[in-house]
Every structure is written in structure tokens, then in C-alpha cells.
Image 1: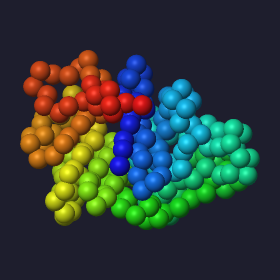
Image 2: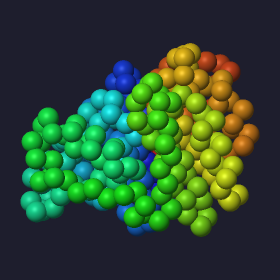
Image 3: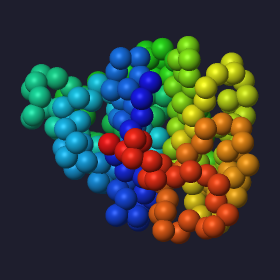
Image 4: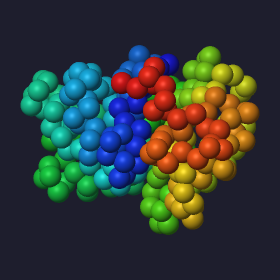
Length: 231
């Protein structure tokens, strides 16, 4: 299992690009989120032609803003008959994706195929509905192999959700990539002080933040500080 980040910033941290991860898992290349800046990064890194599946956490622009471009890349730069493949955690979330891309791709199923996340052994979707923005469907994801667990929070205002789930899993090497805010956001994002003590429990990294705002008492290592985690 391998993970690289195409961007680590929040919605407005344009210097660090939109948070997006490239995960190699079970022999597949999975792109998590494709915000406004992500298609450019996929082209710059040469990864745009290597996507097996797309996985989305929610529908804010910094997470889906270049989704249509990524989908069209499959048609016009790869096999014209090949459709982009999206893993979905629920039927209702699939319908939301279809509705979203319909504004730019009037016939979404001409360009897209959908598959349940369960087709990838060891991939679990965690329903975090309303834990980022009230009333908004959001998802976190957990990738589990025989040797390791990797958790990816998406935008999540309650860090307990991820760690409570991990308590139900077998003890093995665990890495958690958790969105982190250095500002109190009233539950929209996870405040770093609520994550600080977790570094004693698991290998934890923070993303979706501007490292220039990092306070002196932050204990959460930031993805952007680790070149081996960056694509």
C-alpha cells in the first residue's frame, strides 16, 4: 500500500493545491478527490493516464472542481471507448455524482462507470454525514491489508469518528491522514488541539491546511513537510 498527495491545502490555500491523494492499493491506482487544482497536478506528474478508480469524499469545489476534466481526459487522451470509473459508497451518492457532472457532461453514463467500494477488498467507506457541514453527505475511507491500515478522513469536524472505528479493527500498523485546522471552525474542520494527543496512538499526519499558520504547540506532523508523501 502506498500513498502520495497531489495537494495538501485547504479550499483557499492555493499555494499548496487542493487536498488530493493517490493511493496504490490491491494492485489499483485510486485517486481520492479531484478539486480545482488536481487535474493540472495529474498532468504534471504523468498520473492522469494511470487512474484505475476515482473516489470522492464530498462535493465542495476543492474536492470535485476538476472532476469533469479528469473524466474527459479518459475519453480524449486514452481509449475513446474507455469510461472513467468511480467507486461509490452508496446509491444516493452515485446519483449526486451524476447530477453534479450533468451540468458539464449532459449524458454522464456515456463517460462514466460506477462500482461499489466493496469491489476493492479491504476498502471501507465510513459515513460521516453532517460532520463537515450540516446536512451534507461526506465520507471517510479506510484501506486495510493484511499488514496495514490506512485511514483518510476527508473533511471531518469530529476526529473521534475515525479513531472509534479503528478501535474495532485488528491491531496492526496504522497510518491516519486527517484533515487539520489551526483555527476553531465550530465543527466544520478538526481542530489541531483535538488531534494532538492522537499522535501517541497511531502514525498520524495532517493535511488540508496552510502550514504557515501552524502554532508552536501543534504535534500533528503535516503531510507537506514529508517529501516522500508528495507526488
